[in-house]
Length: 153
Image 1 (cartoon, one colour):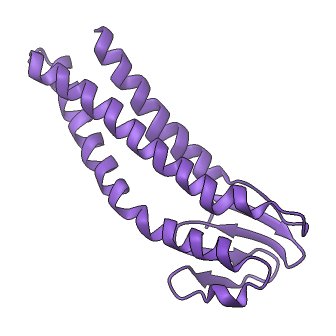
Image 2 (cartoon, rainbow, N blue to C red):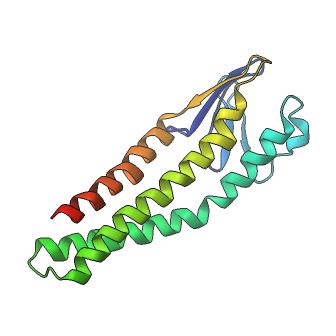
């Protein structure tokens, strides 16, 4: 809750959202995405339902991202310690590029379904939270950069 993926300002206050929660910062009220009844969100029930689906669907790509990160780290260590082979280089490049692009597309999907749709004519303004920014830079773009560097080395 310290690094939300999205922030929403509207008539009902300032809200922050992550993968598992939606919290009102003024009242301290927190709702769990899995138990949240989107039909109660009178202003945007469809947007709520889309975001609810997205937050559940992001689990599998997160597991893929973790596996590719471990593969990337292991093969980078092998290359650094002098056990460099064509297979190690290929796996380093693949893990960096595939893992980074895969997770980046997941984050774009979260942005499109949970953040961008919340800005509307009713006065709601949504923006990317620091958590989404940090994960986007750290888990995606740096991994893609690492994969590209392995291609050149």
